[in-house]
Image (cartoon, rainbow, N blue to C red; front, side, top):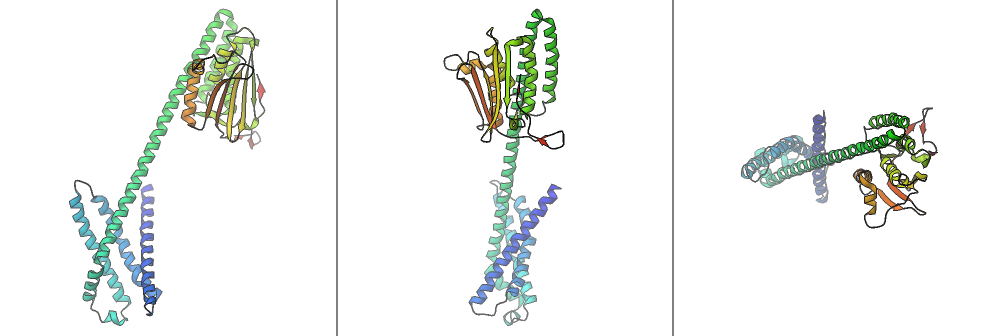
Amino acid sequence: MRERSDKRVEASIIVGGWTVFGLFFASQSYLGQVYRGRDASWAQALVVWMPCALSWALLTPGMIWLARRFPFRCAGWPRALAVHLLAAAGCSSFALACYLLVRQLLLWAAPAVASSPPVASFKHLLIGEFHTGVVIYFSVVGISYTLDYYRKFRERELRAAQLESQLAQAQLDALRKQLQPHFLFNTLNTVSILMDEDTRAAREMLVRLSDLLRASLDRARGHEVTLRQELEFIEGYLEIERTRFQDRLTVTVDAEPATLNARVPDLILQPIVENAIRHGVAPRAAAGRIEIRAERLNGSLHLQVRDDGAGLPAGPGASGRHGGLGIANTRARLAQLYGADHGFEMRNAPGGGLCVDITIPFRAEAQPSPNGGESDGGPGRDG
């Protein structure tokens, strides 16, 4: 089907191009007659030149075939040149014969034409216009080569883009496969700690972990989810952590309703929240607080996770040592998905604690509401 469509497009281009050719030379002939003060007829000029253009249009598929069958390559260029010279001579002679035939048949009443024998007229045309036909032939061959090279270039470009997309997809898959075991092992480590302290709490945590892993696998089809889905996943993860920390962990979620349908990378917040719990809450006996914010700013989605812990240690490279695999993985995924169109910053927050800011392009996904319309989401919530 696609090949048939391509042939129709090629035929349309050939007919259209030679129609323009015929109109151009018909207008040139007509204006020349007018300039010389002779009786000029636009219809007569068209009648002579359009069949000439049609003859070249009929020859063009053969010229294109010869151009592809005998390309000018380093090894076989003498043979190709000989073939094309013979073809150019034949095409030029054929087009001139068609031109003469049409002129003899349709302009027989003109005295100059009537008094000239066909053989003499053809000889006169051949001497005066033969080289023009050869130039036309090689022009068509050159255009054919140009279009073929352009098409092959576009195909190579498309294949390169597809390969690049497949590579990026594979890299994202690898990063996510690193992240899921990382999250699982850390949670199981928490369960093993609780086994000695509170068996019932450990059992409840395993049940919640099972539900959370099921949800994670269910949404593993794509690399982006809505912010609403991401926050629901975070809520499930926090339920596990609350089992461990009890009243020591307070989490506040403040997401603008308009941001809940925004597309975000799957599991983008979990390693950041886990990092905040690990470094901001776990090392101290006092209660800790984590704030998760989401807002839309100038066409971008701004996500922020802030804790009230000790913040970044002093010294160069402190943020890299503070984050570990989860933060490094998050940075790599953002770079892979958004390139230069994202921002990621870890900094000490005013008043103490660590603040992680993420900025990505805002792309919303419409969510159907229960009444059949579209919903922009609900208000933020506290945990």
